[in-house]
Length: 215
Image 1 (tube, rainbow, N blue to C red):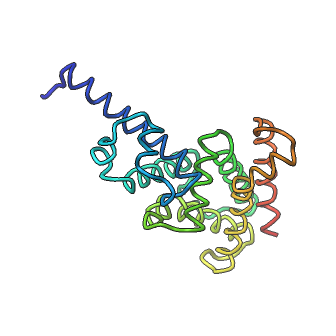
Image 2 (image 1 turned 180 degrees about the vertical axis):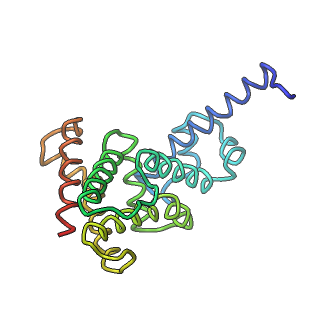
């Protein structure tokens, strides 16, 4: 059995720290400026690492971007129940949809990291890069499918119809709108940031609106 030495453990810890620093820096920069707007020098300066760290750990700027997207998608997915829902009664489906959308709204809004991730997801929707396929399969497809299936159950319809896909998209857009238009909301509320109560209130409204959109 192979065991690591203290020196190896130190190197591994430093390597993980460097990767984490670059991913955090990438999230902050890419969410504001997009992939094309960020230079590698900005990334290493923001992360406080050497220029060689990007090609060594990620192959290039695009590799950092892909790692950031994967982490954002995984972080949101980990907070949601994305198992394919079994066919349910309308009442059970309403409860499941409301819970899912409340969790999704919170995942988009309840921290500075989640807000930056939300903006990055919005950028990928507006101007998809070649990394969008992975993001779609990891997060958007299972989330969208779950919402559409629950809509079908609420409406006592067979699953898989086009109308359910469109309705699911409108429901998800209600949550995303709070993330994308966050600055306008902050100004209207007269606050520098959303409080826990604000996020809880928004999540509740998003859940209620999701049910109303199924009528």
